[in-house]
Image (cartoon, rainbow, N blue to C red; front, side, top):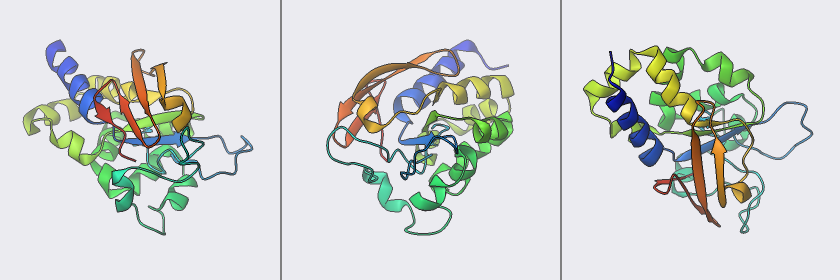
Length: 198
C-alpha cells in the first residue's frame, strides 16, 4: 500500500514539476473550427498535446508556443493538426514525449473517460517529469490504480482553458483539488512552479 505521504509527494512532483503540456478537448459540435489542441493531459488535460493553441492573451493567437513545441512533428498524427482531430488520450498516444503518461492513463483505465470527455484541459506531465520520480516509487504508483487515478485526475480541469485564462486563475480538478495558473504571453506556470512548455 502506498502511504499518504508518498501520494502527496507524487502529487507535488507531478503537480509542481511536471505539467508542461496543456491539452484541450472540445466537443465535436462546439462550433469551434480553430486548431484547439488536446496534454495534455488532457489529460491531462491535459498530456495535453495538440497543446493549447486556442485564443491567447499576448499575441500568440492560435499558434503553438513554448520550448517543447519544437519537438512536435510538422505533419501526421502527432502533429498539432493531427492531434487536434483526436480525443485527448488518443492525441497523447501520438506524442512520444507523453509515452509514460499514456501508460499511466491505460493502467488507471482512464483512456475511454478522457477520450469521451468534452471541454476539458489536461496538464500533461511529460516523460521528463515522470523521470523525476524515483523508479521504485513510480512503479508502485503505476501498480496502485486508486492512487494513480487520483494523481492523473488532479491534472485534469473540467473546462477548456485557453492561454488567456491561464494568466491568473484557480481551477477545480477532477480529483476534487485545485490548481492555480499564472503568467502572460508565452510564459505560464501551474502551482507557481511547473512551467507550461507547450
